Image 1 (cartoon, helix red, strand yellow):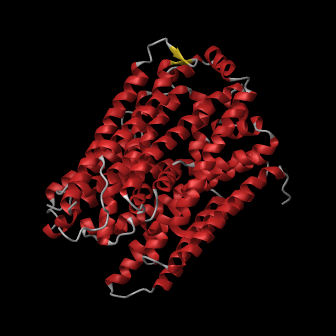
Image 2 (cartoon, rainbow over the protein chains, first blue to last red):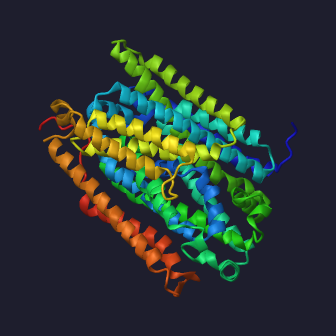
Image 3 (tube, rainbow over the protein chains, first blue to last red):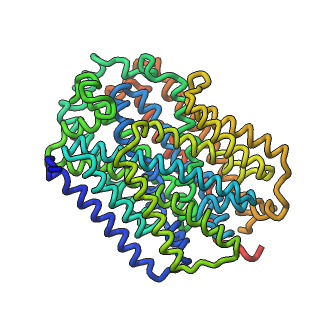
Length: 495
Length: 83
């Protein structure tokens, strides 16, 4: 196939990916002494992150390509109600780090844990629960990663004029390679670089949208005259109250239980860094969310037709980039959204790989009292990361048509499975194995069924069913079943 | 800090984070829906649109700064062998 696109649009992305690969080789070279053992090095970066990188990696992992494409497209269509809803994500960093940051850091050091599942296994003394958790993580992460690959490659194709496949090869293969080679520390540092590129991308686009749209005043006048509903919180019915409620649950409060966020609590060096990360992270996540969605609204200054004339809501941002950016900067403008995509993929890939290697395989070996050498662990961990990444990459080459539904479905599924299990498991003495098992298993199954059948209560997103039911099941199990033995409780709740 | 003291402090911090969340939700409700009837404008935006976006963001930053200054305490994360 002959590619006909804008060559200048490829260069910044290619350079950026080369830097990412460089970082990962450097990190690998730096870690050659193997201090702290391979697993700790590879899956939690030897617990050595400082505040800035911790903040940036948490934000970058959380912010996905849809924060950059679908979200601002909706803001363009709905107006300020969309930013009002999106701003609930300022909670995404301080809640998880404030509630779980120190709790998991202390427990992980006590037990030598490198994954969230390690801690759950210890708390509930259940291999079945740990295996279920690992299975849920791998399943939902694969769905999310595929959606990120597809979203990034579609944006690449729409803006540069090159093919979807070329985009996928350019950034998709690179992310799999740099994650495999560099492990957690490379993921954290590249995430920080990605977050910086996302912010630069937002500022660039904001600036050129204002310039091409005739200035802030002219654009706002245009909106007030032609789209007055965009200035109302309910947007003339496009933003129902129920949507605000479910977004608080889905992208606000319950995000504290996402395993890819919680594991960051195991990875930092000291509490000073954690405190700094909570502040920096809140500044950055708010800047990104408000900045990108506000830019989406201001794009009314340049895209004045109906959404259909640009190919639908998801094409609003690609069309805006292609319309307003000078040809020499188009390449730079797409690095931001692609960075959002790869920084999510890299973290999920690593946590998914740790679930297979550490939570399932290694535990199975240890139970049979078989030891595994560091060299064997190194080969195995890298192989699993590479294979998992390659599998998702191949699925993304011929993406299933319902991929976007699968992405949102996965988010709610992870929250249903882990929210109460982690929150009550780590802060409530009475929480027991039966409660955790019923909550994680039953809640997730019912959530999946409700999604599959399209069943909703009062028109609300199925996360409300999943999260309510998993709480009820947790309480029933905890009061019906026996409390955990005293020695376990003493480890988790020192008195 | 002994292990027990660390555990109590961590619980206090988690509870304070929860309270900060409730305060943020209250501010979010008042700044957005609460002000949506007002005709006042800031930077050509209806006041609710400014307060409920940039306002909520700034309020969240102040809250988190307050948490880390007054509630959160530094502690050694390594296990204390002397308690």
